[in-house]
Structures are given as C-alpha cells and as structure tokens.
Length: 150
Image (tube, rainbow, N blue to C red; front, side, top):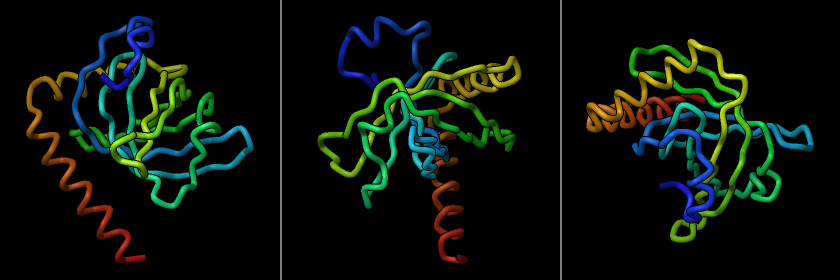
C-alpha cells in the first residue's frame, strides 16, 4: 500500500486497488501558488488515491503540500478526461528515490459521474494491468512530444 503506517490504512473507508496510471495535477498551495506536475496513481479507491511524482527541481515543499487542494486530471481508457478536487492528507519523500514525492489524497465533493469513472478505472486495473502500462507508455510519448514541440 501507499502508506507505511497501519493506522492510516485502517482509517480508510474503501480498500485501495494498486496499479500505476498516468495523471496530471495541480497543487493549489496555502500561499495561493499553483504548481503543475505529471505523475502516476499508485493506488485508488472510491474515496481517495496515492499519487507519486518526480520533483527534480524542488518546486514542491513537502510541508506545504499537506492540507493543500490538489486538482487531479485523469484521462480514462475511454479517452474521457475526469477532473477531481482532492485534499492532500499524507505527504512524504520517497526514500529510495530522493526526487520523488508520494501524496495520499482524499477526493472532495465527488459527483456521481466522477465516482462511476473511478469505479470503472478500478475495474480496468483489476482486469488488465498490462493495458494500463500500454496507456502509460502512450502518455509518456505524448508528454515527450509536447515538450519537444514547445
């Protein structure tokens, strides 16, 4: 699971499904700063997710992220883009990978159609993990092409 502490895991309302899925998100900090990142879902449930991202240039302060709003954007396997507002509940640096940050988020004010999209994503993860990796590779090619064309 995302968290190492069993107390945090025990407090979850829904069991998390673990898989990697590409995402984009913005951290809306307490200081009204907005930082955009690309990363991946490590796990997801109907009420929250674990995300991981690389911050090689130190733009994100771990202490400032906790409690911040996060605007999460997921392109579903169907091509539909789902945007979710969440709050960062747990934040830590990934010890073996010093430039990576892990964030446990809780979805806020989720609408029925968004919840259905998350449920569908969970089912896809359970059915075909290799399809998700194929989508990840497509996403990375898209991001690389976008950076080259800037």
